[in-house]
Length: 418
Ligand code: ADP
Ligand code: ASP
Ligand code: MG
Image (cartoon, rainbow, N blue to C red):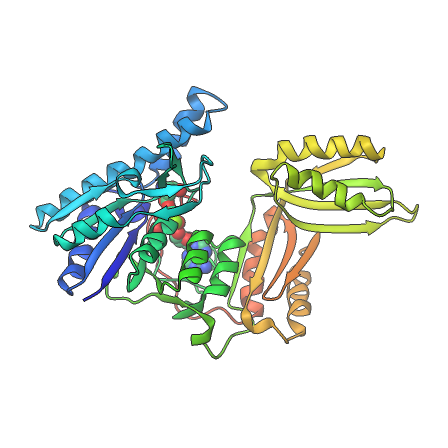
């Protein structure tokens, strides 16, 4: 007998029938002799709806009030799921983030968990109860309600699993596991039975939204065995995500993903002297703006151009800062390109295999896709392409690296909510 943490996403609890389906999955785990903590997201597209509602009230909703609003979505689903479990004759209790003691930093809309109190959870488990916890939310030491960022319920579940020293954390969703790319884009795509934390973390960071990146980070840090599996095919084991030491063979490319949420800024005619890049990126860092890809190039007139990408949510602050730097250096024009997508390939097996980058560029060229920027890390290569070419690029890369299969993935529900 162990402790299992289960997490069910929005599609899995979208209506009363699906909530009963989840209740059955929870009860099945309890009947296996385990203590069960269930983390749930808001029903269906509730979070999107609440965001839309706030924007109809005001263009710039206050971030504290946004968290107050968005956290209500999960509170609805925990109560309904606890009722459903009780209606099957089992003892269940729902708890929101504050009741559990999911303590976060005070950064509204993207707070990080700093501590999880386990006393109340342990007490309920000892009494034989199934605990249903609201995902995506926490509370600051001062009692302010926070949320963890879109898709953050995965992180709530893994953090609770780590705090309880659980035997496993199962992320139930609307696909049957982790595929080499989003099966909505390439339906005949291979599914992984097993993938390393390192590869999954990179994939999640470059746009595979099947898992919230911080959930994988937390699982890796605390060595929590993580499974991604289907809410609709409960006997299917899905994909196991574990540490590298347990894996021997790596494919050169484990997955392909795209991220269309970045914007490229180009600052031209900067002086070619020491300290220019330090000034540009120092100012951005001071203002907490993360920069992703960077290219610096020397023009024929001896000046430098610096191009870099930032998240679309930070574009206004970034332009303001770059404008100041432009004045300080008496630099040339600033241009902004939002018609871009970053397409990445990820695989621990690409270490020591020098041909992979060339194969990626060849596949894009053969499909008439122009590359605007390139960046590489040990197990990842990213290319910036035009937004409308993102899906074409994904398909071309899946073909190039042999990631397709004969069988089509089953995808339930409508478009993902992240
Ligand atoms: P949930 O509401 O259960 O959290 P999400 O929508 O956040 O579900 O995540 C599941 C979705 O992630 C799938 O429906 C799929 O479209 C998408 N996805 C993107 N990349 C991948 C991938 N590599 N493997 C599986 N699913 C992926
Ligand atoms: N409900 C939140 C969202 O839609 C959190 C989650 O689903 O993980 O982003
Ligand atoms: Mg999700």
